[in-house]
Length: 345
Image (cartoon, rainbow, N blue to C red; front, side, top):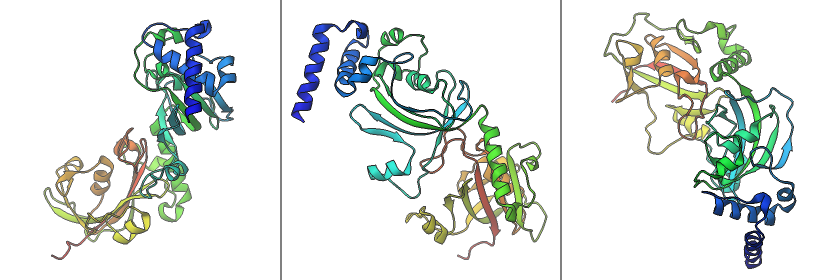
């Protein structure tokens, strides 16, 4: 360890004394630039000598994709691992990495996540790395601290003039898919889900969304005993299970299913929950709080002792941000709900 540190200090000293004209920097990032150049010369000397690409990133590895091209203003579905120059991982999407780090939880979502490619929505260096990439392609790139900025400039020199506190970063990522419209992409995935589950949904297609609610679908599983609508402030009781489009359970009132799915919690009571009806679906509450729009819309289709499934895009769920560690952003959701009798006290 001492030898590595001394070598690093020596490399930095050489850079300071020689000036290294082609890598010189002034302004807010002068010290950051000197440190980064020393690190690069020690760890990736050949790559450092070859020089950066674009506005100043270094490409360690690259595999070309064969799908559609990633463009500005859309959404790239990506698997990634993000770390600093010392190898400390700060973000990841894969189950394997979670297990390596000892942070794996069965209830968490592991898989690709959407990154918006709108101008200014990504660090400048990552946006540069995505330029010209196609679906299926992958890269491992080093992004210096000044290019972790969300500002937009044409040259590295302009970024170097800005103050920066974010660490230089190594991004290793694969583009799994790309779309210019995240809602339409989800509707397409729901259509695939219907096709793969015809035993449940029959000939249902994405054209069968609820009128005035594009991207929301309801399928009755068990007919109600009474078709009369519930009155405002009526309290009913339900069991439910929430799933991602791939079938992964993230929430349920069924204790056995919760244990089997890895989402069981000792602090929770597994039993039917109370729902208070509203004048409109948006007024429906569960317990003492509100519910997401898709859940409320599903209930709004139902009558006494009915059982059904609501399937809907993230527009009716948790939007671009997702919820916690088990529901990613832009995730279509499935809720199976059954209206049941009031539990005995």
